[in-house]
Length: 420
Image (cartoon, rainbow, N blue to C red; front, top):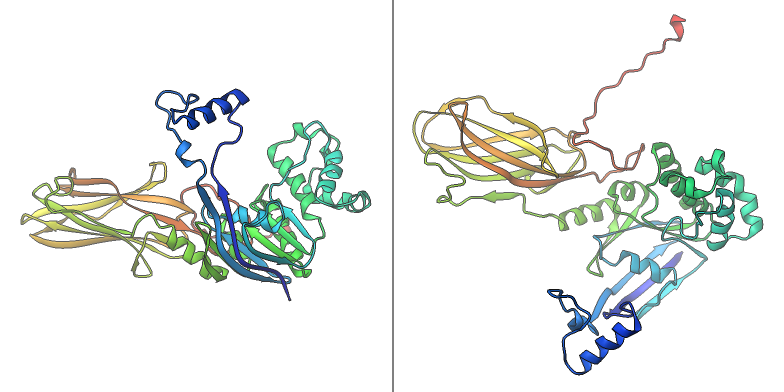
């Protein structure tokens, strides 16, 4: 049964300035605009954005999709793609400019966890306050109170003002309240991945229980692993328009390809002194995954860094090396080839990073061509970049795992009970 039907949905905002600070400033700006004079409220050198006032911005444009009962639909896209606008329309926070939305059932929205919490009130008082804001009555909150507190894991501090809570405790309690709503449709905006590893598992399990109970979930997140694990289908938005809809892994792959910063390959001009010193010339470099040139690779697939170079003199003792740099420019590791005497001609070196070695994130490769072991003839810092993504769900902690590398190491377990 279809519980959400969206047809040709559009939302347009009119750009402008409302309430610049004081009534006097607003009047001065309006008066200057009427007489076609510069904005008197702008500082020297500040850009005049008055030309944008009155222009229209399309946050959503002609979006259509359907959601079936009990389905978990993931909504992904870059910042500004229109995800939050779509959820606000479905939650009736704002109205669409055009199009039609048909919803069957009561909607509960987790657009911002912790909205309505008062820092001076205790955790107990905030459970009742936040529960009321989210649509539960007092009797319902009383019935679920012990379950909410146990889920949050803050039993010890439930009568302590939340202003003394850590950020993790605050969010855990807020999510626990929201997670115990009983709506037919639950809308979640980037609030699932909170707390530590144990609480992550609780959150994921709770969302699965919600969907298995026949309730419908719309879930927005930038954590692609969570979307893949939780959602059977996904919707990809770009610049306010629907780019793709379908099986979550296919949509995630499309999203990754659409956000690529480069083609995964670079070449250099023969006359450039940066890559040509008269003895050696770096010709091109590329990133390969599944034997295809790409700048986006998945964690569970090997990554090949391949580069071509030309030897311009006979009898050169040549070796090459690469430095793997993380996004802040810190060198993660360095590796290279043994020295070998080469004559004039074209050569290719390649280094393979194994699957399940690099962590999520952006990396760059610096390439060095070396003669006589110690002399760097050609060196190009951060010559080529690539992203490593995790697209398949994990059963353990779903947050960001720290570190630049994330190998799958062997673990052993031995029972010592027999020795006691």
